[in-house]
Length: 242
Length: 322
Image (cartoon, rainbow over all chains, first blue to last red; front, top):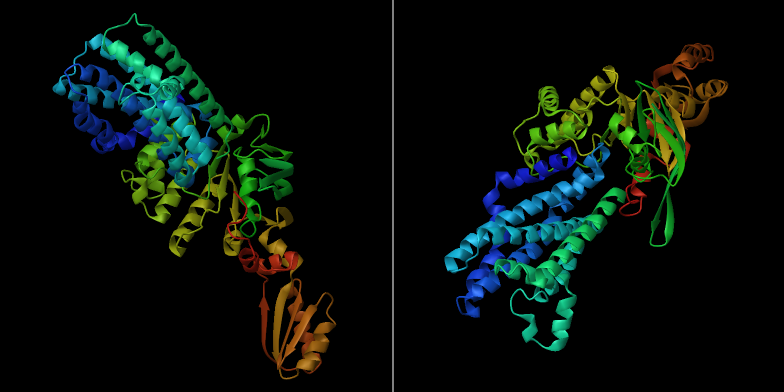
């Protein structure tokens, strides 16, 4: 526990020294979607539908690139230096993932505040519950991102893997447009994508529709996904020699 | 402090098996400063990475700082310090933060770690508040060492400590390493620099192609393997050569104009008798020179090639992690 906290504090430091740059550089994409794409959906109600999707999109895109911060540390030997200390191997992952969850939450709050200016409305408890989904999302994507970075070790290997997986996952999650309006085959594929269920759940939560089955299904999927990703990550960090 | 038997590591690269380290037996006692000398790619770092729990040996066993390497790696980690070839501090971190954190990772309380960090910052002359990425090469290396010793390890591993440093930073670093040893820390370092091994180490293990080919103190290695080089300048070279050839153990004779060169062990003790004999034989001497062999001579005798040749003969990129 203490080890995880130490690693968390360490990975937060560069961020705290320069918070604006890092938080906003990761936020440009969702903000652009909000400002330049959101209005195309038309109607006052569309924000209630669109903004929850953006939370998931931010979790996907922002957090997926977290692993990039690990690669220089692998190359320079900083990670190895820590691996020779008695620090728990798992906390080397958990501390970093914790950082990304915190960053994601800050981004979500900023995005929600900005959306309110456009006409997005939600109650505080609903927003808080939606953020719980964001936490599980951050844990899943963050763990996978660091684990892939640890396995691939180089930016030139890591970047194509990311761009070829994150983009389809995002498009197939129904963040931008409702998937059920597309052809049957596309809808079927999107249902296999776990993130589409998480998007549905966050939308239902924001709508205050807590009895909807998608809240439960999305919740189970989010928790299971986070558990599996963490398991893979901690196992890799435990075993790896890099 | 270290007792390793048959330590070996293989790597599989595209279907080929590379024996990076082949059955190394290593003994280091408490308080010793031992050097692992060999060309790049000889398996030095791989051995170090095994001894520091970073890499699992494919064969062999070792006890490091009183803990079994295979069954108690956590115990080993607690008791050793390790300074790798690369820089261990994050570029976007402040020097002081990395140093204090290092102590905390070893279980020190925040206060205690801060106190020790302050002492080391002063001792190693480091700028506490600067970002690691903005430090000079020498400062980064001193920070690496400071991080390696902050928790007061009984045993410190240094992997190529002075690579890439300018001569001044290098001798400064040597001072610090000597000081550590004087303070009772056992130091095990790797180097491919002959002068470094010569200047620092009590004992040297010479490695080549993943095997330890010789070991001993720098002087013992030089004395036992190569012999001193004696150069005589004389007006009667053939007579001088005849006299010298009568010496027991003299070898590698070269006569070139009025100079006679040959090798013999303990040349300094042989010299007085030789001078008398030459005098009696009527060979008039113009100059005499006795040169101690260098470690490069030792490496040459052991492996048939000099260290520099061994380096350039290495395949591009070398072994992974070697």
